Image 1 (cartoon, helix red, strand yellow):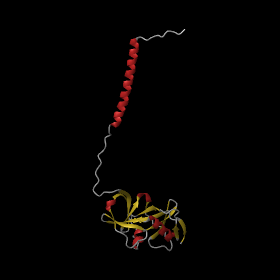
Image 2 (cartoon, helix red, strand yellow):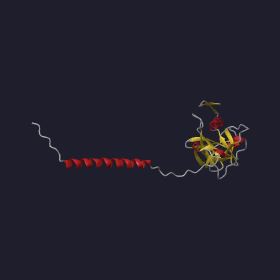
Image 3 (cartoon, one colour):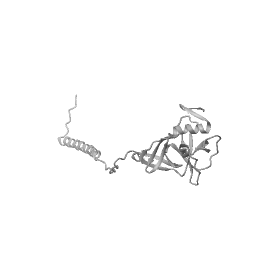
Image 4 (tube, one colour):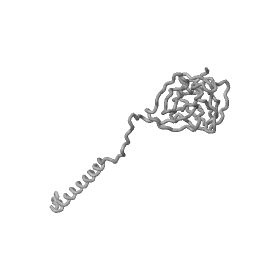
Length: 215
């Protein structure tokens, strides 16, 4: 025998139906509130206008050597050390000052100004330092090059429009290009070629296609 269906009182059914409507309405309001907060734009700092002609900024290091300022990528510099007289090497050009021990490496030290201008290397002073530069040649006999500099190199941010390429009529060895940096003469070195020159002068080695051999 099927039990008779018990009908709920109309008042109770109406009250439960009303509660369901309230819950659904509250849920929609919470979702709506989140959406509106996401659409609210965040406060932004005003962007300073760039001067006319300003281009990308180059982060680099300036190092004085001879009468020139070397412009190097900061990532190419391994360390700046106090100056110590390099141990001389036999049968080397005047610009190759000798070698020093650094981090268990024998690092050749050069006077870059004397190399590119053919001048007599300048004398060291109390402010002189040795800048250890990473070689860019893979498999190089000379993974590091020491450059005698007149003082501690300085970090600089240079806008491209501040650089004026002046050329290199003499086609100096180890020079990528010569530039004017304001009123100062500067040089961007060719580190790949420079490592080959130093390796050949110090140890009689040359590099071809990343392989090292005797000259």
